[in-house]
Length: 134
Image (cartoon, rainbow, N blue to C red):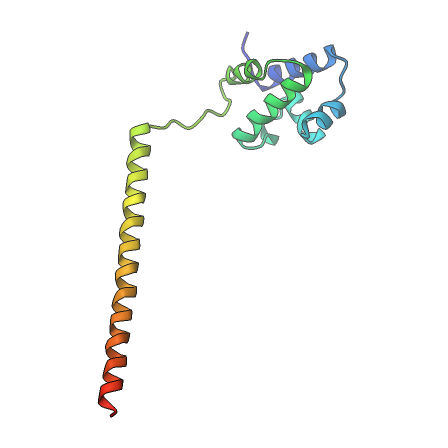
């Protein structure tokens, strides 16, 4: 059986109805707007929020109807066109973090040296003023 947004939505609806819950009850229990609950149940992917919010909504919905949140998310991930997590390479992330840290360190050093230079120049200016106007 091919899982798509519509089939996933029908499954959510079926689980909710089996427990005698209304859309409004789910919305109230999860704090998900009723229109978004309806969009989830009808498979209207164009109305879904960003992936991270959507997965949290699915988890909340599953919890409200007494399902395993992980099972519900796993079922959602069976949909071929479902948004996927962005792939990441830990080595690349560490390299980027080190580059940002190095850049921040050099910026801080440059700022401290710049302030020190300005203070030194101000001190020389004060000495020049003091000893040339006697």
